[in-house]
Amino acid sequence: MRILILFLFLFSSLAFAGNNFSIKSYKQEFIKFLSEAHDLPFEDQKEIWQRIFDSQDAQVFIDTFGWEGTEQRNNSLAAAFPFYFTHQDIILAQFNDFEENIPPLLDKFSKLYPQVDLAQVEIIAMPSHKSFNGKMWSFKNGRKMVMLGMDFLAANKAAIEIIPGMIIEDDVQVLLSHELGHAIHLSLADYSYENPLTGTLLFPLWKEGLAQAISWQMNPDKAKGKILMDKVVAKYCQEEYLPSFAKAFLADLENPDIMQTYKQWFKISFKTTPQIPATRLGYCLGLEAVIELNKNYQLEEMMQWSLEESSEALSTYLKRLSE
Image (cartoon, rainbow, N blue to C red; front, side, top):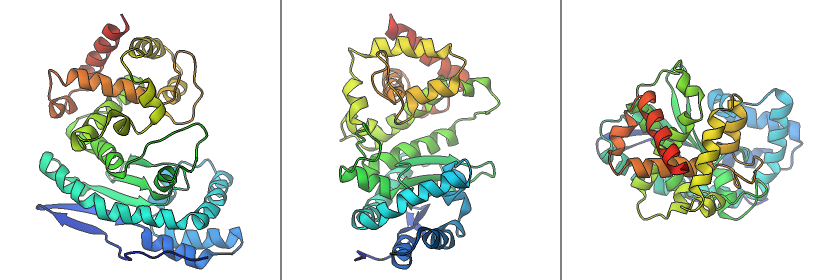
């Protein structure tokens, strides 16, 4: 099978405007895997993958995926490998898009938030086994990473359905802005995860709302639907629907099954209900709450609020909206 090789360069770090950014693209490794693993049995492909990727950085390629045992991991790899070979051209094109467009965005971030040392956050372009478009990960040892799944992003751009029923509207600059928004927020905030408020739905509502607001700040020319990154969520994120969503969210705050309610409001591909007609509507409510609060408070000020302050502000907003 033909392997597309465009602009073959690999960079690990770039410097802009006096600020250092830790940027890692796994494009070269991906090309190496395609070359060595083509037309081989799955077990041989898996061995090559482990040698090229897992052995280089197990935290990135194993720990952050959260597989529950070897069988689940093998199933994930077995589903991803054929996709990689079939769609290698568009995946490599997505790597190129990342390498071309991300450094200028980081320069913009450094100028807007000079007090945040973005060099402490690793920005990684990688194959994700079709499991995520982007996510921010923080380890107990202090390592922070923003990871972008080039295969997931490429599939969405090419209108290849990965998750049935989901119409995800990915834009790599918006996505990175969102994930870096999380990193900036957590750098400015002083949270203790022993605080019981981190175990309520208000915590992800606040985090996602701020991340999207920062993303919009960085991409002011983008429509709200692009910032939400989901056409279905954007369809329902309208003034006429918000009161009923606020009522449902407030009711779920009383539900002790936080994992169930979290999935309902913030996870992709979870069942809908008449009260919650789309998945991930927590992103809509979070963004709308921050937009409303931003009328009286600056984003940077809100990012430094305590959990008590943010929870009180969100509760007040939701109760007023639901009336």
